[in-house]
Image (cartoon, rainbow, N blue to C red; front, side, top):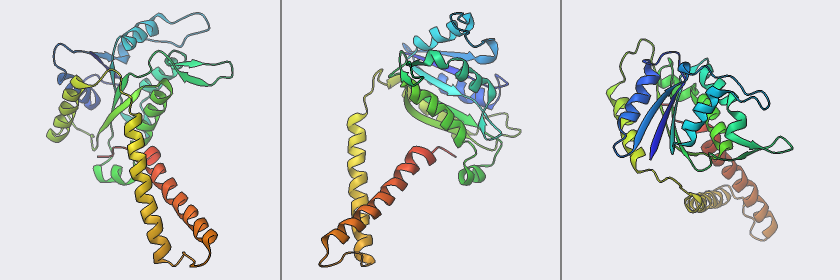
Length: 253
């Protein structure tokens, strides 16, 4: 199995680079690890049938890899420009675009990715405000469109003046590097998602019934009123928890 680290930062030896190198150091033989520093590749967008040869090189490396470790710092509350530019230039290669302009997973489907980012913002402030969330959302949106399966995300905060990773973060990066050795090349999580959905619905139904009984929303002789209140409460609760797990919840510490 091959793990490809893609670094999109202004410095190869910065905090982002140290995070990526630590993750890749956990990859053991016979698995292979390679680090690509985007600043070393002067890529340009394709123009019609004129393919950019540098993008050809990067695309070949991505196709030959089973896991991508995508590392880029967070600047101004968003993904650093070099990585974003790379995603933009690779757009028509990452996905298949139909005659209506809609995107579909293509050759990269069922590969896996791990996201890394960092920011100057303090740990507590990032935990409360989610400064790094938008960086993770951008990566997730691109990878989801390409059909690439998410493994995890790691974040380091309070990086202003930082020259070495904190021991706890270094260990977290190394741990995930070790885990990459045992990632299955194809991972269908459909059954897992259905099990999670079942328990999510079971909990929401229990909470809904508790609210109905607690606030007296269960008319003794009116089935349809009881049914309507159950549906409304259940919908609000389920919508909230789905929004939290799909949009709001990202690693912040």
